Image 1 (cartoon, rainbow, N blue to C red):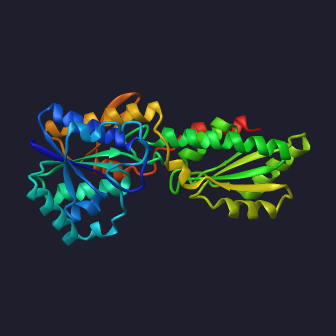
Image 2 (image 1 turned 60 degrees about the vertical axis):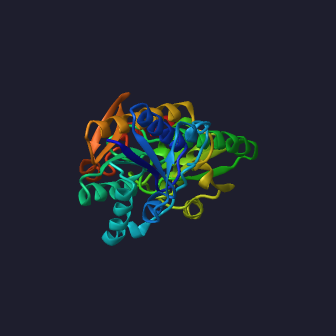
Image 3 (image 1 turned 30 degrees about the vertical axis):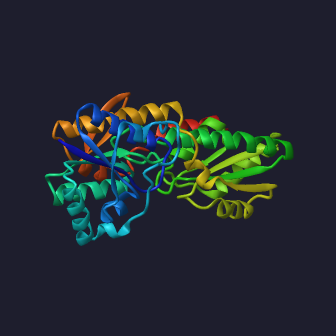
Length: 322
């Protein structure tokens, strides 16, 4: 292992910079040259690679987003396009590639490992949705969670002052972890997640029962994968008349300085990724389970998609919101 490349792909997540920093410095410590790929897989196609030094990642651990930039690249599904990217990696003498991102990013790394076995690939889970099997937590999840909590705490002040029901729409297309964890943390009266089918009429009845016992306001947390906040409000209005408001937190959830937990997680996973490359490993996603570093084959990660949801935690949230 003489040269490796690192890229960030898909939606940005707080802590990506910390992961890149760990990859670069661990590699250099072990005598390996590192190249940053700018604009994700698009940068591989366009040969936008630059050598990174120790100073290249200085003053980045606390920064949100990704200084390598990121981009969606659906054309990477085309084998001819991937062949061009692989040729660019070969022209730079790259032996290993570290990909920081989510499911789609991992699939690109897997294709490279299949079509060019001499280039080893390792994935680092960087996505706020926490939807990657093989790890308890993904980089960015904790920061996004705390951003939601801070926002909803402020919204609740208004909700209680005006006796209103607030519907909070959070990210989570296929995974309800952000809605679940944030809902439990802020004491939401109702949590809607893609993993559990919920009857809007039941939610309306629950809110109405709270009003009858003197409750002045409530918080409904809905993951975007279930429905939009506006659609939720319109559905509720069919069964109950309350002074309701919708807040869509949107991309604010992706931004901000990473929390201490995300910085440490990113640093550990970045270092572990390089160690695996040095050991000759490939087509693996790194992760953390019960505070221990792990590695899982891409095939296993893809086959277990959607298996992480904590139904016990969901039941607890239901019990505490009576």
